[in-house]
Image (cartoon, rainbow, N blue to C red; front, top):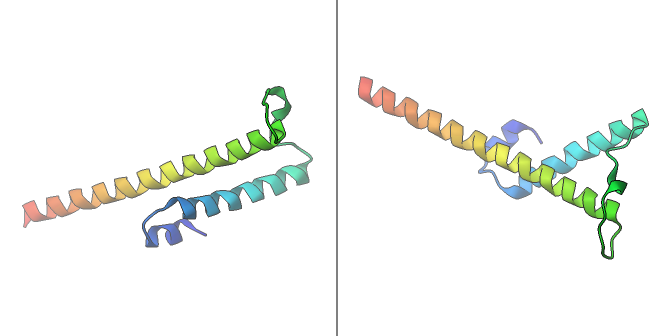
Amino acid sequence: MTVTELQKNPVNYTQISVLADDILKNVVERESEAGGKLGDLDSYEIEGGETKSEVLQNLAEFQFSCVLYNAALENACSELGARMSAMDSSSRNA
């Protein structure tokens, strides 16, 4: 999925979630090839059924997709604002 594909339809969270999954898969693959680790998740205390690394990994992925969604919405809003401003200027000059 590319940015131009995202701009063809109104932005929704599902599209951004798919994009975030693709990005995170690439990051994980590159980190594993380099022998690195995505972060030290064992330094936090979490109680529950899942392990703390699973919870923090899910939370980090959700936060990343929310940040991408926010960026896509800001991009769409600024594009519409620029179009409105351009149309207003052209109407005044005509």
